[in-house]
Length: 99
Image (cartoon, rainbow, N blue to C red; front, side, top):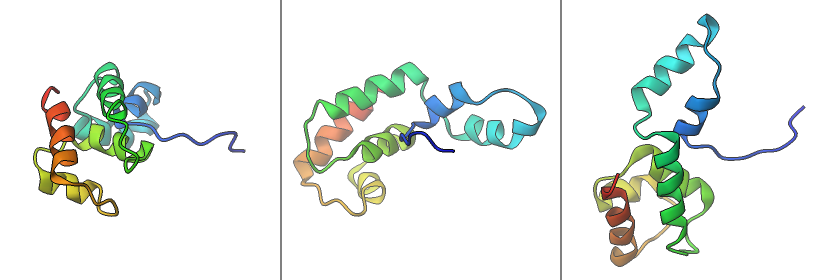
């Protein structure tokens, strides 16, 4: 039974998944794609949240933390249903560059 639903960054998932032979495919995937530590991912998401951009939902912030976009085109791919101005996209990139 599902009690609650919450979006998680890959770094958070990595810290929650138990070790074991049956979990090897999950760990291989996470090892390949997790870039930030759980703490850095949380800090990045917090800084993005502080932008107070109403266009960005929690799942968008998590995707940005997971993929760490390098340019406006990358942001557009991650946020394909959201239209950001160049200034909004640049504000996101400035935060992401710290990580």
